Length: 265
Image 1 (cartoon, rainbow, N blue to C red):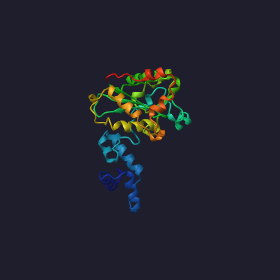
Image 2 (tube, rainbow, N blue to C red; image 1 turned 180 degrees about the vertical axis):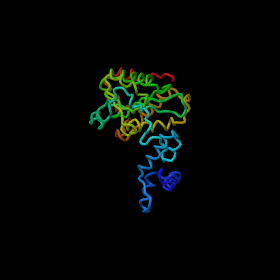
Image 3 (tube, rainbow, N blue to C red; image 1 turned 90 degrees about the horizontal axis):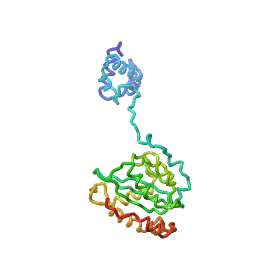
Image 4 (cartoon, rainbow, N blue to C red; image 1 turned 120 degrees about the horizontal axis):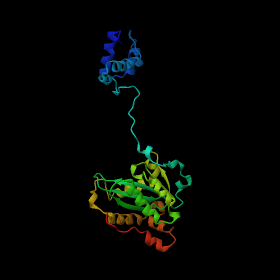
């Protein structure tokens, strides 16, 4: 292009209008123009100007404005920092049938204003839900609450836990001491933990995203959990989640001990 001022002016004018090098090259070939140029040559010309003159304004001639072809800034993803992460695809297939109790899904519901979140824990076979108000999404607070819940259950009621790849679940491996196997969904695949996603939708009827963080406490959440757990569900043959869940609990004293305390959040 440096040796042909006419071609240079034509190409640069087309680049200014927003055409890509490939479009310019393809159009010249389509029109059977007397002057031709490959899109690779256009790219090389632009990048040569940048290197030779250290003038990065040349990159604005390119559609994506990149100073180096093929370069994309790499950002760190939470999934890369999750210790002992096991994908949900490695979870036993029979769990999908929901015939065995003790398989859970967890998620964190956020509010539009910073100050509180709601930890949601759903048992897959019974749809039994447990709720707790969290001061933040800090992983230490989340795992502490999960340990409190699972620690009060017999082993048969705490087998696996599925969750997404948020930073709030970074300390999931601390649950392994309770006998819980933890699994993570594929990024942007919420359907892989459909039970808790469905429950989130039900909870949003009572706690929309615009809810003020200080307008409810943990006692309110226990009342809501009780309401959800005593509502008949069609998928359970119109039994309630509480009826199905507590049927699996053997000692009566556990049922009382298991009931979360009405602490104010």
